[in-house]
Image (tube, rainbow over all chains, first blue to last red; front, side, top):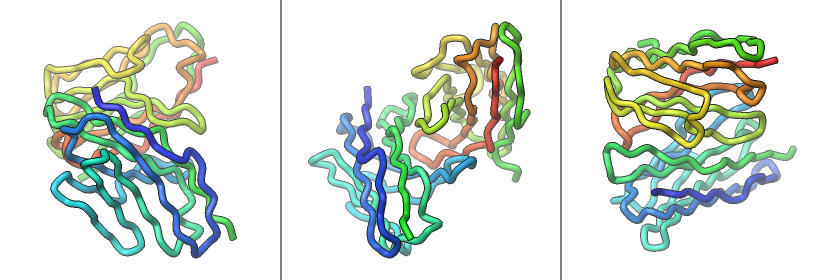
Length: 113
Length: 112
């Protein structure tokens, strides 16, 4: 089955700098890759997603890149702000419609003043 | 639309008691999931369902049961509660496995 590895587990970044979180997946047939943000005490919420027919997607300060050959995808946050402090989860969805989405273990991002 | 609604928000159980965590969604989503999240940790899948009448185990199903008699509802049953089941439980739904998950606000369960 699918396996998703996420790195780093913790990341501290100076406010205004960029943050990058990386994920690798094992099933080459996976074709949907969402990213979720979970603020302290809140539910996870989707921030951006990418499908396997696209290499990069941007939404304001957030971007996701996908390398299908290497089976990895990354979340990029530019000009980080205090409200970016949260836990971020990547996930990969298999081709089989009866199979489940697989989450990475999460990255705790700290934005330092 | 209310989205995904979980009840209760908080619950304290004694060891050995049973309870049902309720989850309902009004988006006509086929897929529904139950996750648990221990403090400072990631999401662990307990059970999931790809449609009414179909359920499947996730990575941590022991001590739990589910049913999916309707598209809207996906209750999670805890039998003989144990301290190891102290956690925050999230229910989520999606139209299929290639669409974003919509999470409920969670149920914080303490077993003492």
